[in-house]
Image (cartoon, rainbow, N blue to C red; front, side):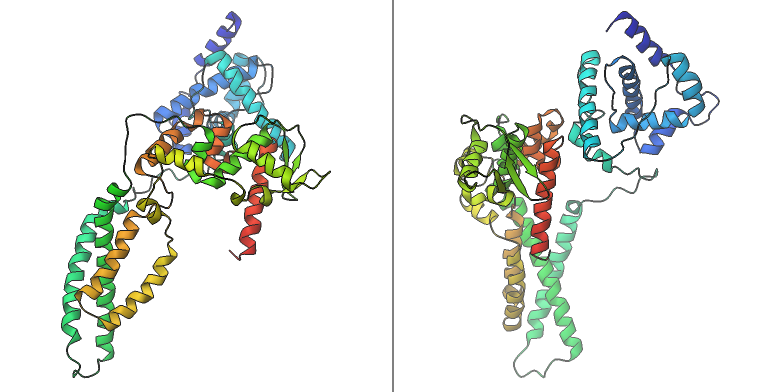
Length: 449
């Protein structure tokens, strides 16, 4: 930083944003409007000062993060101080706020300006804080969808597990009582037909027994069986995973294919066409390209008719065309994915519950005794307690959480491996995300979802 630039930055830092005549100061306005903590608000103001400095010294137009933009918006509301004091006296020139005009070209321009702003920030101040200068896909994705909430914070919600023990004990107690009543009410075959009131009582008893037995099975399996089947829950070191293994661990084969397409689009080999749902070959094929990208190009050659360059996205992204066995075995060897009996349980589907309930009701009608009422929902609870739709072990969940916690510093392809299409931003990757969203919308419409 040059001496003249240091003096400018010192002047910007020395400028007092708070007006002594205001009972509610600038910082209080800022944190109340955004629901921020006081330390976070102070850090956002410091980043705003750096942004203003970059706006004056950078050789390009600068674009703030959403957090810094909120500070700028508030400063603009103090219009007299901003235009009559801050800009002429401290900056020496006006600093205007230019909102986006909309459209694909404008979006691409702001993406590139934000990247250029981050590069200039690193040149003058080092690495920017990720919570105040997030990656471009977060800046123009999640942060654009932020809605400023009410100032008063709602009561903290109670998690289900906080109530699992007392509620489980209560339901189990009610189940035992209900089962005893059901057994006593069964009587002998010479008893007269039950009245409507007795029938309703039997239904209530059955529901209580079902719920309590289900909770009992779930608690036992989640506390005892789940740790055994989904072990190990921790190892000595986090394994180093490449992007493809990380994509498979995160969301299976579909995410690996999305990663491969993103790599090809980013390298300028393929161009997505969201309106036609097709991928167009526009670049030279690199025969040494490793991993899933090379496999996808091989499939592309097989599908593309001679002399044509367009192939439907659904044809390229068909999972059955690729072999994911080696990736799955690699993750299983590092105890990140389930295998054996645990893998078989993880592959069971929730709709089995819908089949189980009518079978249970029929069994209750034919055998309204203690074991007939308690055992079936207990087994169902056992299955629900160890069910792991993701197919990951507890250690696999911990490793994935580790990579997610560092995702703001990850390169674009690794963020796509972790987050999927929502991390596809900038130029052709925006088109790829739109194409995938269009294909998913078409699929949902076709099945009436």
